[in-house]
Amino acid sequence: MKTVGIIGGMGPETTAKFYLDLIFKCYKVNKEKRPPILIWNVPLKYKIEQDFIEKGTGKDKYLPYLTKAAQSLEKGGADFLVIPCNTVHVMINEVRKSVGIPVLSIVEETENFLRDKKFKKFGILATALLLRRKLYNESLEKSRFKIVEPSAKDQERLGKIIRKIVITEHADREKSELIKIIWNLTKNGSDAIILACTDLQLVIKQKDIPVPIFDTMDILVDATVREILK
Image 1 (cartoon, rainbow, N blue to C red):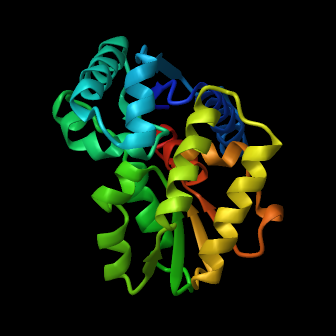
Image 2 (tube, helix red, strand yellow; image 1 turned 60 degrees about the vertical axis):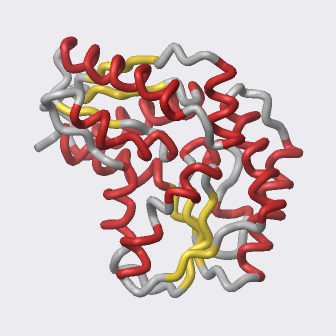
């Protein structure tokens, strides 16, 4: 088995769920022993985190935390790294250059997973920064899909919802607001939804909405299991 290093803490509930899902999915495939896992909880300042999530600013302040995490996990014995957070993948090239081990990309794994799906329009739920950088658009649109983004008003609401989830202050209100945003995406033609923010799976489930949901965290978990058991 390979040792995976998880750059986590963005937010902590998602990291914890990613860890547990990884353990249980590995067990389904290999019942010999538990997988070796290292986790680095990024000690990010809350103000940097808030600006990054809600405003899409502060990338230069955020990056040193990520590269320090990657290098620490490599020194700790990780064979490869994963980051269960979509937005920080705007910096994945810099993270990859900072270490000598592979770094799986949640964006690349999701694009590969969706490429053969029979849908026309994907509604995407993500932070403002990820949408501005259009991390998913180019590849998916080359594969004949169209990407439908939330309205400016809905995107502002979504940023606040994500921030509340990250600091574990979410409740039923956030769920109902998220469902409204998804309904608006379906009204604009979306026949499937990409949860391109791993924190959103903590408050929304497939049974809550009328179109298929593709959770990028689930996709990354499966890719990580694949690499661990290579």
